[in-house]
Length: 562
Image 1 (cartoon, rainbow, N blue to C red):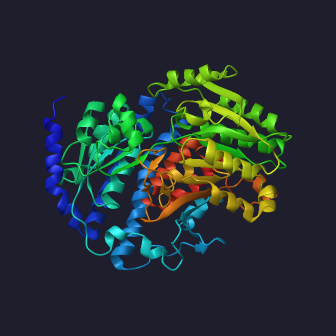
Image 2 (cartoon, helix red, strand yellow; image 1 turned 90 degrees about the vertical axis):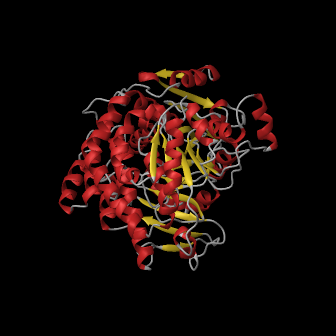
């Protein structure tokens, strides 16, 4: 490895870091406006490159994933952080229009979406909240956001961002968060799986690159290792695996295991991380109809198969009630939905080995169409079960069951104590059951130790909700990192958030009206079964780019046909 270019990148950033730290908000907003324009102008090329790399047809509805998980997510975050910074600069309330409330136990909750009428219209029936850590109250919540912009600016620093290879917006969003939330200039090393996007990203971030605030570098693990230990790098953010985090902090080889057990770090730099885990989907028993079973089977298949299963937030364990009259029917419907979803390549390196690992652990594993696997009947009492302790990161779904009596409380305990990782958990609950549970449902959400909890939605929706936080449940230590530490996205710049909670409608429009849900949401555009998803996602992205109200009828028309 020739380190000359890497050293030069760090030298350039070191020379510019104090200038960025001292740059007024107005100057930072100017860069955001220019980057927004460049994202919009290169969105088509961005998506085309990602689709080609993942082997998707140019007209496949699944291309919605590359729009929503690519330029749309970045544009939404830029729009949201722009509003926050404008409010901080003007001395006005960044939470204006956001409902701030307090649970019976004293926990403060801020509703962050829908943020305005357009969000209410386009995501009708969906909402997102950020729940705060103990000590944050409605009276002081505004004092615990945007602290980097209050008082004296800190000294300039250089951050290393190790980008993920699965979702194309991860590296740009992590880069932007380091710049705008932490005030650090950034050297971004792309995962080799996403190297094809490097030239496009360099075009998009050209204003920041030209002035020395951002550098992109390329290469394998040796480049990442060199930069992690470079004396010019002050902090590190990684999106990837627990193994990668431990290699950064404790090194590699047999000695690293002992160092981790003793928490003897070879790298003392602060490391923030988003590392995935084993994500549950908890199915609360209730009066489901055949239509409910069919729709939620598509929903579960989406939670698993979006991006071909290569998501840190993919559902891995379907937690079902024993003896519920619909358990077997739901499993059958999920099996069918997994088989019927459009075939696609398992593009991510190592997928076949990880899928084989699941098959080796479970003789009952069913090989489905397009390299998909369903494992039913995993023993919930087996604390060392492969499905509970190892992230599949492949199109593999497992099921388990718990006693129906006191099911929700049992499921929360199971998810907290048996499953490795704390990134996200999903709950599916019929509207009638939801009303019967009353505050018990929110109590269950409060008890779940996960960074994002989705009720009748997929936690992946939280990823594209820019004002929500994204990351593990707080409290992990380097020697037991699980799903990581710290948050990203978080466009309201909360300093002490605990988790984000996404809520959606159980039934699509128009059936939602009969179910007592005042929601006009059809089949969501992120469903793998949505046939107009590509058109809807593309139109949503263009609207995020320019905000033209004339685009709304076209978005709604496409969405309603999905």
